Image (cartoon, rainbow, N blue to C red; front, side):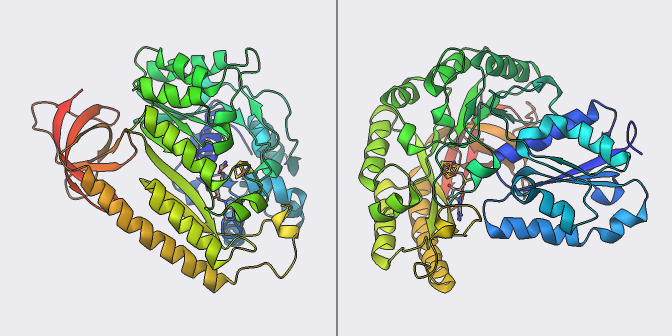
Length: 446
Ligand code: SAM
Ligand code: SF4
């Protein structure tokens, strides 16, 4: 049984693109009368929107599925769909191995979700895994976004880089940019719904090129910045090979673009960067950081790192630590290398692996270094005033928000004379810089 009145629940793992895909799926079901529920035990249609980036993420999905047998048998007509990147890569094998799964649907087929759910209701098991090659377009009006402060917009799908460790080009397909005109309409629609901040998304967001006009990401952000009421625009994730002087210059002159640049470097060793097929050297990365800082000194950098990549020596790792000390990232994400099926590095064979213990020990040293640098940088902000997007009430009676440079900021609630809600912008004077956040007091509502 499918259709109006039935309840669905979406479990989401992984990146912001998956979060948005889940919101798209929720919107498609709601438009057909299904109701969202936070409690999966209560739902009729359960969607597991999966991440395949590291082995651990994949195993979480299987362990969750392993626990769902009784749940599915408890009520007749229940449907389980596996979507996202694990669905794309493992596809048919999931249906073969797990009879409780009704359909698998890859990230390129989100719009066909209702079809798969209806088919499951009629007893068919469906596989929807074609990787699209056209410019993406979707009915953005029906996306089910939680109300609040900020919303995501996809501007470019897929990836053409084929970094030797990464599964994304196989799970999300080739790079395809969305039309700028449609992106502008979506951003304006979001402003009309009360969102003051949007984050434009892509695996290599700065490779964006409008399929109609060739407009670059810099051009696109400039156009979005002209939308009245859109107060803050963020962009995720950039690849160093596509950072242009034009983009650095735009960051310098357009204050509505978030003062936060997530620019994954992965390693500080040229030897490892070459093996990863990242198409830049550590020197070039530092040059880009300098160029951006010369134009926009208040922009905070963050990055992703992989430690224990095949063949990584202690010297290579020392180069990574050196790069971290040189750049002084406001934050970073670091991962132990996880071999992924189908990627080039996973085929290199034995002899190059870094033992897991050694990789974990490097990860701990890297994070320790970053903690110290981060604390110092946050202390350096004491006394300054930051523009903060209010996210809501936090812990301990304080309010919580995110600064334009993407730092978490806690501050005491305002006097009852003016109300504050999620989505408001305020200026906060920083009083204490902690390791992972800032504490301050309200300077003004803006
Ligand atoms: N497109 C982005 C880029 O070019 O860096 C990142 C995409 S990926 C979803 C996010 C991060 O996961 C990567 O930057 C990388 O640090 C990490 N990652 C990807 N594949 C990995 C692997 N096989 N093992 C460990 N970490 C991995
Ligand atoms: Fe993966 Fe590299 Fe593409 Fe990023 S640029 S998604 S790391 S292949």
